[in-house]
Amino acid sequence: MGTTFEKPSLAQRILPLFRGFDGWLIAIVLWLAAAGLLAMYSAGFDHGTRFVDHGRNMLIAAGLLFLVAQVPPQRIMALALPLYAAGVVLLVAVALFGITKKGAQRWVNVGVVIQPSEILKIAMPLMLAWWFQRREGQLRPLDFAAAGLLLAVPVGLIMKQPDLGTALLVLAAGLSVIFFAGLSWRLVLPPVLLGLAGIAVLVAMGDAWCADGVRWPILHDYQQQRICTLLDPTRDPLGKGFHIIQGMIAIGSGGVFGKGFMAGTQTHLEFIPERTTDFIFAAYSEEFGLLGNLYLIVGFLLLVWRGLAIAMRSSLLFGRLMAGAVSMIFFTYAFVNMGMVSGMLPVVGVPLPFISYGGTAMVTLGLALGILMSIARAQRQGMPGKPVAA
Image 1 (tube, rainbow, N blue to C red):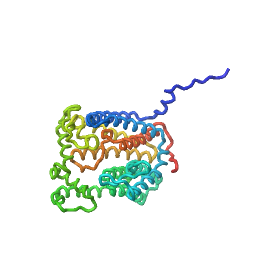
Image 2: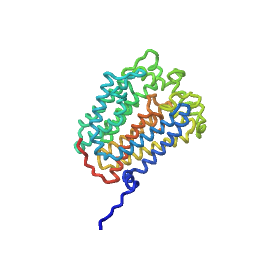
Image 3: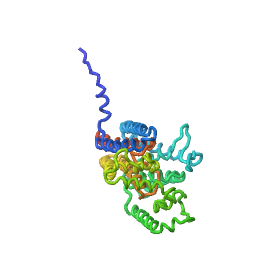
Image 4: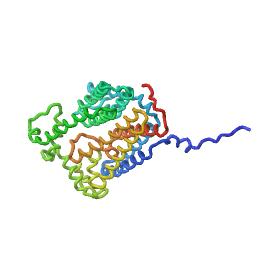
């Protein structure tokens, strides 16, 4: 009599796809996504379909996270070189015949209009992690110099567009990989101290540096104006300083407990510019106050902690470097956005992860989280650490 086999149920076929998922990471993402939906419902209440679109973007990012998490880190690593090369070629195309909007040349038409600099947010750390994986066990100072050159090319092209915010994010992601690869503190500390000294001098001599007719080298006029506005937003309270002043008023007026959901006057009387995108943190702070801000800060700190924990457990150097870089990407996003909205950093157009409206940014976050989950799954399922040749 022949043996009969039961057909596996739908649940039995689907559950293995989730095996090895990091529960902590999923819980933290849901923690932040809940805050994002609440903030967008209020801030985007009279912005048409912003709330619905934000939810759709989150679902797209979640789907991307799930798909990328199915791919082993070794296979992801094999994509590093072609993705980086494509990104740099597209950046060159932007410089030669890109599309200009609002004084910035950041887009190119390749059948559809895209912003290539967004690709480099992920391609850059992927490329450097791939580079150091290939040099594992035989790292020399020249290898770090080559990594610096790989980083400098796209960052320079992005700054030329000009797009200081994206250049900062790409630079931070690349530098984090180089640092985690073993760059000596003796090389890191001098430029950091020099930068802090430069900031101190700039603050002390702000009036002289920002006087009419004074031109700074390297920086564009709008970048110089943003720094001068940061030092004293009251120089132009109804113009360039308006964003920072209104953001600070909204944050301060929220107090400890906030004015309440949907009760933010600065938000709903439209005093906060870009209240669903770059300045949504001001709208959130007004309604949820200091306690709401602590909820967000704790969520981002937990996300960084979990990412670094995944990095430390990875048996593959590529996995350690990439997980560390993704963690620092989230830290940089959150730190820069909260800093610029509260008047501690210049306004550079960096969104707040999970909170700010934006399809491209949300997709980038979903891809980054998918890579992080892939690394976590590989460690949990005991996948071999031998890299696949690119």
